[in-house]
Structures are given as structure tokens and as C-alpha cells.
Amino acid sequence: MSSNDRRNFLKSVAAVTAAGVASGCATSNSQNSTTLKAQGKSVMGLIVPKMDVVRIGFIGVGERGSGHVKHYCHIDGVEIKAICDTNPLVLDRSINDVVEKNLPRPDRYTGSDHAYREMLNRQDIDIVIISTPWAWHTPMCVETMESGKHAFVEVPAATTVEECWQLVNTAERTQKNCMMMENVCYGRDELMVLNMVRQGLFGELLHGEAAYIHELRWQMKEIEYKTGSWRTYWHTKTNGNLYPTHGLGPVSQYMNINRGDRFDYLTSTSSPALGRQAYANREFPADHERNQLNYIAGDMNTTLIKTKLGRSIMVQHDTTTPRPYSRHNYIQGTNGVFSGFPNRIALENVPSHIAMQNEQSYQEHLKAWQATGKQGTKPRAPSFHRWDKDITKWQAEFDHPLWLAMGQEAQRNGGHGGMDFLMLWRMIYCLRNGEALDQDVYDAAAWSVITPLSADSVTDRSNSKDIPDFTRGVWKTAKPLGIIS
Image (cartoon, rainbow, N blue to C red):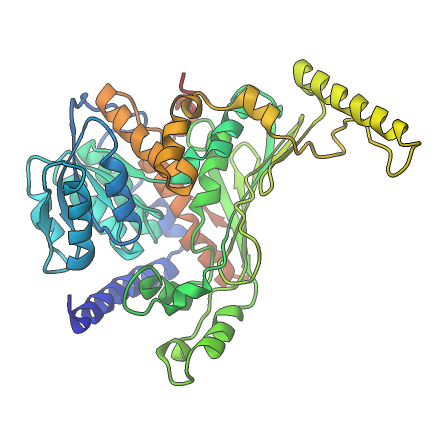
């Protein structure tokens, strides 16, 4: 693609983005009940006929998509049939990745923003992996399902309340899966905490915290290619939580959101938006396009969600300020708490065998302290007033069965510590074995809708905004996500 062609494509992305953001900013509570009347039956727990081989098409193989292609070259029971991208360079790179693994050469689709539609006309593709700029996610998912294929899309799945309902309505009408690929739900730590929660380790759940705190100002230097070439503009259009799902997905699964509980309403507030402009002033010439933008997204957004069962969830977003990476991954119950980054745990009632290990360790440290003539700080007895930072013993007891079965393979193949590979493997496993996916369109909608509703709340002096019930009441009887054995 020539430089001019690439600029034209980015302009089209910006136009789609602006339209989506404008729709999101116009959202009112009246839109939260959009299309409450179902156009088809619920897809909660949807099981589709078993597939001996899952035939895959890809839309977008730049940053995330190229990694998905590589992973699927190492997963049994798949055929990579076709790949589409507007950039021939990254398209050919992914095709070569497939060929180099001695697999059949996928067909290529390129040449226009809508070249993917030709690929969707094929009858030999079962699922489509969508890894494109955010503004394209919902339109591509809808067209994928309408073409008779299952849609698997990168986060977020939608950017407006209306788009969330589009996804739900289309999935119910076509009876096709629409899964937002929230990879963090397949991290070792998150899976372990899910297992702990299911075994009642923390008691009754009360509160969770989730975040995407990841300094990404450097992406502003990606002008014509890569994520920053389009993602930067979202900071000029929306003042809210731009990227809620990485932290929120796992916490939602801990709390059985959409499967026994659901989001009720939220309130949101943003700090001043200072960091991006300061970075642009420092890193770009005064007349550079990055210095002509008006950055309105607060450097830190904090959103509080209330659930129907009365639980609370704090969700934060900050991709601007200089600070260490964190997703929080915090869950509080009546018996104690787990907190991530770094991992630590504190319980009032500790499982007996772990309590014995803690007491033995304490006695050993106490004897060592006494042997020094009581020099230094005296070791303290185990208590919920202090964090237990030795996670290895908890992993030995509570590692998720899915991680125990596939964790080493996942780590060997990589992708954010193995979570990417494990997610993709699990998707194929469910499709080949006639099992419901771990995430569905209702999760995609509920987790994604936090962005437009947080922006509405920020604009409205942090007044609360109702969160739609995308399940239309099915959450009350839906079965919680179980522990895979």
C-alpha cells in the first residue's frame, strides 16, 4: 500500500471512529433499553454442532491478528482458509507464516476497506477472527454473523450502546457466536482466582477492582501504521474509560455477571487531560499534527459499577501517566481478599494445610531470629492483617485445571505469558467438542458498554447511568461459568 493509500485508509478509520463516538456521546438513558424485544432466542449457553475441523478466516493481521495466525499454526483441528488486510505487507507476512509451517497457503483479500466482504461470501469458512481498529469491530461482527459464520473479535467489541445492542440482536437472530476475545480471562493468575472463588475461598463476594494502567504515550509516534495511528484519536473524542475489558472481564467472571448477577448502573469521573498534550509538546515539532489535536480523555478515569446483588466494582483506565503496569485484579469477600500486581492474599480462615505451612514457616523464621540474639525485627505470626506474598503454595493448591492441562504448552507458544494461545486453543476445543464458549455476546456487550456510559457519566457531572440488561432477564437463571475439569 502506498503512503497516500495508507493515509486514505486511516482517514476512513477516523471517519468511522468519529461517527461511532458521536453516537456514543449522544447516548441517553432512553437508549439503554434499545430493542428490548428480542429478534430471536437467547444465545446464553449456545452450543453449535461439533466441527471436526474449524475453518478460519482472518480480518486484520497487523498487531494482534498476526499473532493469532501464528498461534493457529500450532493448534490441531484448524484450517486457515483466508486472510484479509488492507496492508499487503502485513497480509503477505502472515500468509508466509502459514506456508512456512508447511500448511496450505491461505487465500488473500486486499485492495479496499471492504475487501473482507468478498471473503465473507465464501462457504468454506466457519469462524472469522477480527483484529481491526475499534470502529470496525461491530460492523464486521454483524456482517460475519449475517454471512452465517461465528464472529470472534478483539476488545472492545463495540464502542456505543447502540452497537452493543446490534451485536446482541444479530447473534440472537442468526444463532451465531459473537465472542469478544478477552485474553486476560485466560491468564494463569486470573484462572487461579476464578478457581478460588468457585471453591468459596473468599466467602461471599463483596467488591472487585479492575484496571488497565499501561503507559502507552509512545504509540502517539505511530503515525501511519500500527495501533497509535488510529487509537490516538480516541483520546480526542471520548472522555471516559476507553479500554475497560482487560481488568473487568476476569472480575465479571468471578462475580457471575450475566449469570446470576448483572451490572446495574455506573458513575464515572475523569482527571484533567494533561499528559498527552505535554508528551506531544515534548516529542513533536510545534506544527506537527499531534500538537494540533485537542486531547480530552482524562489521564485517569475511575468508574464505579453497582451490580444487581449490591456488589461494587471499581474500574480504572490510564494509558498516559508514567507508572507501573497494573490490571488490579482485586476481589474482596467476607473471608478475605486477593490482590494482583503484585499477587498477594489475605484470609481470615485459611485452608488447614496451607495454615500449617504458614505456621511452620513462621516458627522457622522465629527460631532463626532467636538464634541471632533477637537482632532485627521479630517475625510476625500469620494473620489476615498482613499479606501472604508466597503465591507458589496457592498455585499448587488452586491452579485452574485448564492451566494445569495446557499451561506449559501455552507458555511455550507465548502471547502475554501464554494467555493468548490458551484462549485460542480453548475456542477451538469448545467448537470441536460441542461445548458452549466461555464468553458470549452478552459478556461482549456488558463489558464494552462501560466506555460510552462512563463518557456519558463524566459529561453529566458523574451522575449515574443505567447499564442495559443485554440478557433480557436471562441472567437470573443462567448457569455460572464452571471450572473446566
